[in-house]
Amino acid sequence: MTGRAGSDQVAAPSRLIGWSRRLGLGPIGWASGVISAALGAMGLGAVLCLWFPAVLTTPSLRQVYDMTVIRALIKAALLVAFGLGALSVVLKRRKALGLLGMGFSLMATLMGGSAVEVATPVRASDYLGLDWFLLNLLILATLFVPVEQLFARRPEQKIFRPGWTTDLAHFAVSHLAVQTTVLLTLVPAAVFFRWAVSPVLQAWVAGQPALLQFVEILAIADLTQYAIHRLFHRVPFLWRFHAIHHSSRSLDWLAGSRLHLVDIVVTRAVGFVPVYVLGFATAPTYAYLVFVSFQAVLIHANVRFRFGPLAWILATPRFHHWHHSAEPVAVDKNFAVHLPVIDRLFGTYYLPPEAWPAEYGIAGDPVPEAYLGQVVFPFLPAVTSASKR
Ligand SMILES: [Zn+2]
Ligand SMILES: [Zn+2]
Image (cartoon, rainbow, N blue to C red; front, top):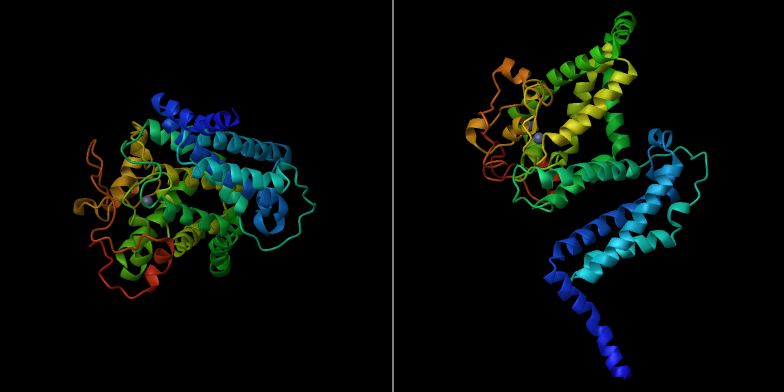
């Protein structure tokens, strides 16, 4: 009897898997495993932030956190990760993802979970923006992954398409290094352009209506970005840095993160100079920062939205996808990030009606696929021509 009961218990999980296959629950098992592993890893990261806030969290974000909400979020993430992990283990023949999510959740809970005490005030120190990375990843993935699934421009493209780990590494490093990149963005303007500051002009600029200042920042920043972006394409040494961004063969919300740190810092630092000199008020400047970080993700997304008349004013996914096109006719076109009118003015506008590029990337694929290979690529002697031209 005991033997029979034992073999029934062993047979039960495989019978469940059989049912889940017959009922077409395989994709649910896979999706729950992926969400479990992602939420478990993020929950564990958040608990590490509670343990080591001075070195893993961003001081300006710490000031605005509502810890009741943050702790509730961590608790929910760990619970959902464990629950979906268990569901995935039951439904799926391959258990690794579900077990990974359950393992992360369990480890985070054993470390104290959402209840870890934080000693305040948190001492000042150099830090990695782990909280900045986790929050951005959570918000952007929650927003863009379902939208890309529902309104895909390329429905056949998978969420975990080739190159996604490289792009996630770029996303992670640029967010973790937020302290350094912000410093390198702000300091050059303050050091080299302090002479250009006029308190009278700044008072006048900051005194304008906030919405007007926002539009002005958009136009001025995009004019500067247009120039520096065109230089990155034109000057062979700079192109080797920017080629990293153009090496993506699949575009989606994560692909826009594929940027060399030198490309990020130089573009932002130069773009910040006129904003600093003119002295725009804080609110419109922050509004611009939020807008640019959202739009930079959106224009790379795998979505087929056209945006109607808005496409005349603002850069859309279709406009920027053509900038990434591998087709010779579209090379060195659509440099603007916000306002396509700048490309119209300077003769670099390219947007055939209705059409999307057939292929993305650089002819000859000169850029290595691995993250570290991409970091060192611009500094290595050019074996083959890295130019698109
Ligand atoms: Zn470019
Ligand atoms: Zn791009």
